[in-house]
Image 1: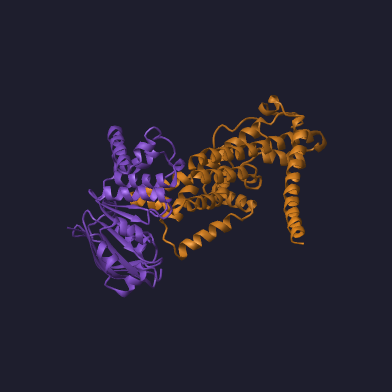
Image 2: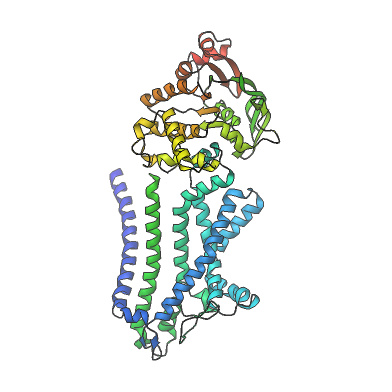
Length: 280
Length: 250
């Protein structure tokens, strides 16, 4: 009887794993097969033509890569900095608990809310206009709580014995923090990159802050508007005048976007395994 | 000569008193063992001596500790300075996930000694002193995590010795080690006492009897008895000490 129970429990767990894996594989296969039909170098590196019914998606690829870089630039240093402060320097108390709870809550705010906030703060109040900078900053805000939370977890998971070992050798607080950070780096980077990959696929926050339906040229500066993969996909699948005709291009765009996000996750994986090797 | 003296030393974690008015003098170039059952406060006591308890929230210390006659909590005492003079080896070996060489060099580098020739020289000297050099001399750049537990602990000793402390605190340094490694470390201790003052916390009475010159018996945070090791183990003054060393409790 016990054996049967165990077998059944195990079967359930296995079944759920296979189910999830199956869905993911199916999704990827679907996008892959559909998208592969239009993917080639020309598709990646040329501008859309004839009302987007032919040509490539280069400005959208460029826009998403540039946007992700701007997002990285703002969310990673500030996020890690805040995490170091919270975990190493801030005195535990009501204020810190409140800050921590707020960060957790911010991570759950819907992305469209960030979009509206971005319009109010960056586009209007700070007068940046609808631009790739305003969008990057908005996405930066969106990823910030995530980056802070994963970084803090990573810092906390460094064993206490490292800290004590360093302090006992006469390390100052800052020297100890630096050592701790070194061992938290794989965790921090993994989390941060995963956060960025989520931001790269967002549409809502960039919708009002700078993304464009169609542009004849690439953004020349951070104050220009831009095209982006997720928004391009949205347009091609719901807003275009000839949806049937652009469907293959939409799948191609989806394929490129998914590959980009996958690429980022793969980088996270490689960094983690590389750096973990030194741990023994 | 007295290296460390404590005066009416008490330690509290929150409301709980873990150490009660300990008065103790520790002689230079001697090995002093602190024994007692689990939870008697012996590790907490040891951690007072290099101010490691500073890290614990809600911990509060009353009384005084003098190192060479200087109050280690005094206004113009630098805690970093204290920890450089009073090195520590922990219960569980805690090498950094760096190479063997970099582990020993860490203390030097953070102290500001950067010259490669000088660092190499001290690293080698420290590894020789901890008895590890022969075993690792050809693979100094191998990760410390690949060493055995006993080797890791001797590496931690080398790391502590590299910054030339005057006192070495050892918190149950052999409790995670096999008998052969334990024997090596005990051997090493008698060698080291020529140049260092050693205080070792142990729950292993045989170990205390084997290696130490002086022994203190701690029970529920109080120092029950302190005497020369030979006397404490053969003719304890207190009934409680006798009960403990004859294995009636603990």
